[in-house]
Length: 114
Length: 378
Image 1: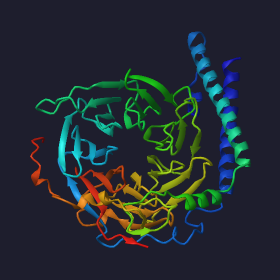
Image 2 (image 1 turned 120 degrees about the vertical axis):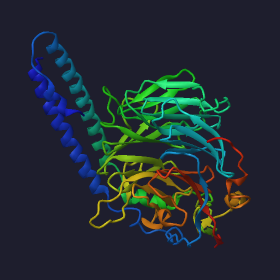
Image 3 (image 1 turned 60 degrees about the vertical axis):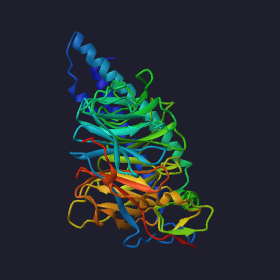
Image 4 (image 1 turned 180 degrees about the vertical axis):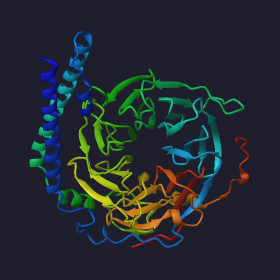
């Protein structure tokens, strides 16, 4: 909300007065709409569960895909395998290690670009 | 009604809105009884992640840009990356072989963002020209690397800071802009399907600098803004955000959905990353490393590992922390490892299968990081 803009409105006669009036009116409508949205959100908050419930859900439901970045594989069907973790659920996908196979330098690259 | 009366009502309405916002903030604080790190978990889920010194290593350095790298994106089919640089070029890399397949000289050199289409045949980019340009990679380039633009998406009234294709839809993408809006585009027609926020709608009140689309439900996306908030949007409802997430005390530079699509992470100029729940609006965790008297470095970019257990965060001082998302502890700093970047890490991205992280830096390079240690089975 650009509340500062209300201070820029000048009370002058004629066409300028009309333009200023329309702008303030449009902003007022937006503020009234925003008020309704915020009141709705406040009502929803009264029925909302605490953060602890959402945190517990995160712990239980953290993804079940194997993670290639994790260093340890857990036999746990409820956690997503992560290739970057030292400890991860299986199954391991052998393609996770393709970054360490074959030539790792671009000396074979014959691209003329740049 | 006279102008004076309207002004009075405007002032009263502004006070009402501010008072309601304060009440909302206070109510939310009352519901924040704990965070993720403070929640007891099953023993395996809360075993700390520990990396040996040679576990996460830099296994590729992609050299070729001659200016700061601002943005990067992987293809869904795993091995290709597009990057955008201050040198005014997009480069498409085969990350496995380090080869460059395209080096596109852009009509406007001031590029800030790039994205790969889901089918890998096109790339999009945007920047200070306030437009999003689409290039078909099957098109021939000139000797100097110029390629005709296959579609120009114009309509933003400010710079294009971020763009992402809608998952599995090569014909739609979402942009974020310095004009305070996000836009959903139909690439086939070049027209705006929806505008989120803006002058006559409820939305961000400052530049929008980041966008992330939910991989599990592509109708939902989040945006991060210089107004210190992140907002969740439903593409079917452009008139208002589904929810606004407060908490950060500075520009929200980066947003990224959590792998399961029910949460998202943010990174900010206030030096912290945060995790939010999209269904309840709760802030689940703050990731903050104390810096003593020194001003905390700003977070430039974030990415989650495929399980969500790791949060990678790049900072303006060259650090790249690997956070354990469940314990809110830094388990590694990629910025301190051998072969790391020599400058700020400006962008991060995880490969589609989660086996590699790509970092882009102001040192002009991109680097690929993967797990090279021994995985134990327990």
